[in-house]
Length: 80
Image (cartoon, rainbow, N blue to C red):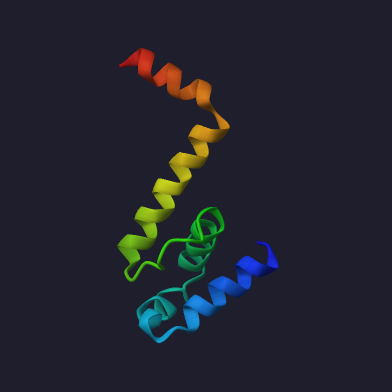
């Protein structure tokens, strides 16, 4: 992750309104998901629950997949 994004994420994690998320990201998997999500879109507010971390990561993953493989979306549409 770019240094400026790292600093922005660290700053958001230090904010007192994000105290719940600081406890959650002690888990390496959740920290990794949060970092990937923040890397893709650092304008969003940090999620406050584990479910929100998974939801944001999943949404960003599917956006990334569509960007990387637009041909697969066309195939999916033809199937349905």
